[in-house]
Amino acid sequence: MRSVPMAVPDPGPVAPPGFAELAGNLLGWVKWGVLVAGVLGILICALMLIIGRRNRSATAYEGLVGSAWVIGGLALASVAALLVGAFQL
Image (cartoon, rainbow, N blue to C red):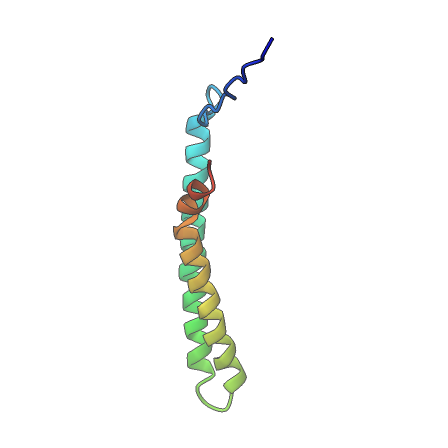
C-alpha cells in the first residue's frame, strides 16, 4: 500500500480575538515615537554642527555622523513593514 503525502496547512496570520485593535494602537504609538525621536535626533545633530563650527571640529564631526545614523534609523523604520512582509513565505 502506498501512502499519499498530505499538504501541510499554511494559514495566514490571524490576530487573536480582541487583539487586532490593541496591536494596531501599539504599532501606531511606536511609529509616532520613532518620528518624534527622529525629529529630535536631527535637531540635536544640527545643533552639534552649529556649535562645532568654530574650534570644535570633534563636535561637528559627531553631529555629522550622528545625523547619518538618525537618517539610517528613520529609513529602516519606514520600510519595516515591507521587510517583514518580504520574509513571509
